Length: 362
Image (cartoon, rainbow, N blue to C red):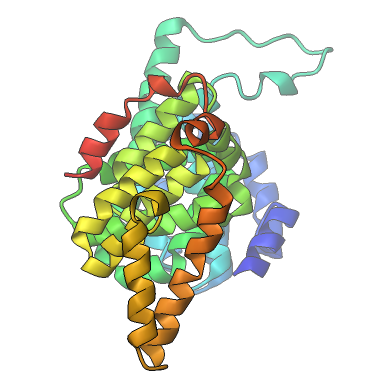
């Protein structure tokens, strides 16, 4: 699928199948009076159920061009059309899926990435187009934002109702959406959708996948950099939005804290997790405070001396080997000195970490 994605991105269209179609569609007199849009859409929808890949690709190209040329007329038909396009995401052809995502991204682009997007393309020899009235702008924004949230919500439901689909296509669909749209918008929309879900198992699975993509995918480099810097109110709001949904998966939440360099909060979360684990986890965390648990360390070394050289002996020895390293690295500092040397941000107090902990603990 990665090869298909590269080919799709390089060529700008999935196959040569559309070479016969594009000249026809681009030369059509696309106006309300000359084009019976309902009739055309009905034909295009039927074409999407055709077994021939070339036919499906051509249909998707037509839908894409119609949305570009007749956006207002297409807007009233988006709900029914989006349902068909969502079903097309399950097509066996990777090329069909990628082009389908392109169409869905076009009709679902959030408003702040739509208005005025073509103004810079107008050359100096052309007259600057008149902007629509403010009321028209607001209506367009509301429609676009509504389409976008509906799209993410419906996509989430598709994932929830088909576990095999999310395993097979979930990651590549989300990565491609982040490439086609704004990654921050995509992730905040998923976070808001997952926040109040009543399916804890699905939410945990979804957050784990989103977090893995966030930490590794090249399409999200900009988003990672913004979270890592965490330097302004906008980045704080992004962190907070993701955090509340990431709490569906404790490991992902700690990972998010590492990314944002909120290390003290990450340790607080880990301390909250150990009561849910066994006594061994509690003891291992206590070993981090060497100066306060001298006799714990001594007792464990005594136990090590009593154990036969079996698997338990090896495991305990490897664990205790970490303690002297930690102790030697901290022995020249007292607690106040260590606290002063920790990486801090002047504006971190603006984040209500107590509130975050309370939400995590629910």
